Image (tube, rainbow, N blue to C red):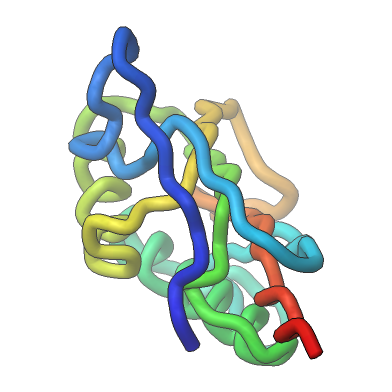
Length: 138
């Protein structure tokens, strides 16, 4: 599958890519919304672990959810990330995970620092908007 996203960082705004996102992302086709993914096992229980381990598992679960609808990270145009007790060390961990998953083709993203998430022990959650490639004209 090709990466049909257009990523935009307008002149006059800072370069957001070191922080793990682009200012704007667009793509042709049908939007697909992926609900919040976190460090969960197949039963929905939070898998214990430090922040980095939870981020890795949450992105693994995001990849699984995308694959279930025939999409991959290359189709994601927007992420919403939620970090319990956000600080710069956690931002660095998240940035590394984003670059590992998307390379230099980062989606747009909003990061929210939160006091807590839905279940005890959750340290990170991510949701996504992906775009199904446009059908070929025919």
